[in-house]
Image 1 (cartoon, helix red, strand yellow):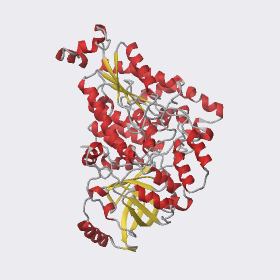
Image 2 (cartoon, rainbow, N blue to C red):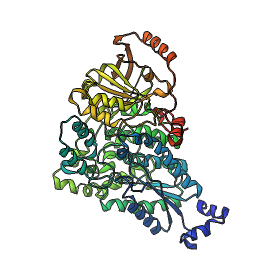
Image 3 (cartoon, one colour):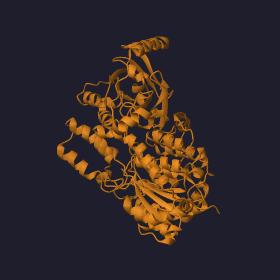
Image 4 (cartoon, rainbow, N blue to C red):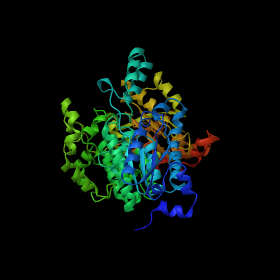
Length: 574
């Protein structure tokens, strides 16, 4: 049997033993498999504030398997708390910085294995990226999901209520009630936004224990999963099974199929390619588009569906979704159990897992099939994501078509370009945007401002009956996993790189054709032109265009905006 990394390092660095004993370790502890427990715990937001109890449960699991745990922390931020101000510009950059810190933790003092405890938008993908860089035996503990408030109130509805309050459609008292009841517990927000999507992706990739994603955060089941993960981390270390043995092209294809079935957040199209990059695997927008075509959408969960995400685990969680997709998945892929996906699913079915999960639903008279639809009775049959291309987005743009009104699937709109989100949302809320217009928000891509979400703008549009089915939002920024309505993001090349979105002028005609995957400039100043003429017009405008001075000249965002790649490649730094 090959010597464990920790024991090899002890021979190279004689200071390690006394330094570890200074923390209370015994000589016997030094001989054990050393397991790093990395988490995003901190009093930063509900998705991370409860994780210390999971860290401690995982540590107990490591000890019970005769390993030695070491707790490390890289606290993440909350996209929700960063909304509405420049804090959201730090969101995507934080993913990169967290991955860097975790890499440092794992490489400065190499370990034999790792447990990664995270549950939210950037913390989970950052840990997944770092697991690819470290490529040690590792296992993920998704941080669980919060419950819903009164009348199944969930946080993604607050943006709508805020826009209604701004327009005088609800009272301040009503708005206050919604705000004070939308987050009744810790855990990821209870809708299929980025946090819940990435929990599902961790399990779909085979890196989390079967059934461990989207467990209600207040449930003792979550701590039990964390303890089992600690035990399994030691088993993986002893067996020498690394994350790179589990994460393959096949496992990413499984994840994309599951992503289509859950109508997952478009931000997964930033995170999965970035994670794949760390594992040396190519995953681009074309893979998403190809695999979403004809895919069944099964999960009836907000924001695209009816139910809060807290109900998903009760309906059978990711395993039930994968059971429905069984004939489409690579069942032979290895997982952190040391067994294949197919073997895991068989064991869960035979163990009565689904019946145990469903007990709270039975009390409410809800059938699991109302939440996770059977394959033959899907909510949709063309996945959730489409990648559009054309003269406006030569390298691609992303739309979550399950959230787009059908009347907006093929339209030609008049361009209303804005060079920042603040100007656009002001125009929308003051009724200066009209039906038939395309609101373009540019210079908000990774190199422009860090690629913030356009959440409040999308909510202002989707909550206005006159605009929700008559205008589109098009941006080189991104939008929240909670966003609804006719929104197209990740436009590439971005404006800061001189992409065509930077060249659009007021009154240009923009064609959106989701079925044919087209996003094109088809006219100038309200007059439709031939493709050749459009190219001439754009060439003339490009010759006159000048890059903007960098928005950030120091600090993290200066570093990130200088080194970030295209949104369609994942927005990571190189």
